[in-house]
Length: 313
Image (cartoon, one colour):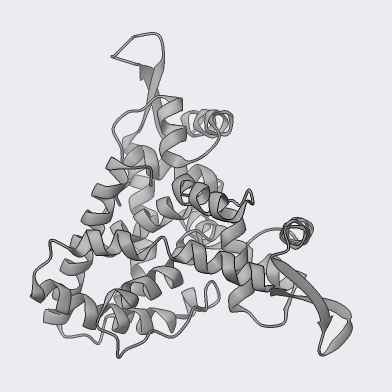
């Protein structure tokens, strides 16, 4: 799944979004923990891990869902033994959420599936490109984390500016993935573009625009979404002329879906909004440093994308 504007950082964000929904990682973590955890469970654990004294209302705002849904999510994680509730320190009538030792262990296991993939992605890079990653990514991480448009969506840990290894890439990914996967972030882009989409429909439109025409089964597998849900969202996207369905040239009995020119244009509009805070964050950079960092990020995105085509993302 690639961006329509083919900006290296947007390409990278699209791949993070795809990987954030990864059934392969979910299955590996589930096998290790014995729990049926989903990418949404992991995203919720990330929020709880990052925010101290997190109330249900703040948890709902941070994950972009209703208070009722956030409460159900917290109860689910609590039943798994991953989250504990305690009395709020400043309000005895409220409860706050925190990860249990088991929850911290799951977060560690989920995060450990990233470094090997990153090592494989950067293996072909020369020393100059690697140097651009080690120096540019921490600086980009720090500058983006200060952008008011992004600060409220994912606090993240401060980058280790002294590191010159894969840890700076993992830290940036762990900061960025919950933002690009965040429903509120998607809704803000949708609202600015004046579109009538849900965050999941937007994600499916991106998958369609970044892939060859696919039938519902292949699209569901690629997007890591249940086929029945994919069918409903694709029907709505087709009604809005953002995707088109046509006979499958391979058999003629099924249909394949692809993004229309209108759908691709809508994605370009949204991506222009996404690029704005990136441009402001890098406005003070020397153009040589901008080019070197974005070129290296593009190579990293290419490596991760190639892996996603070989194995389930």
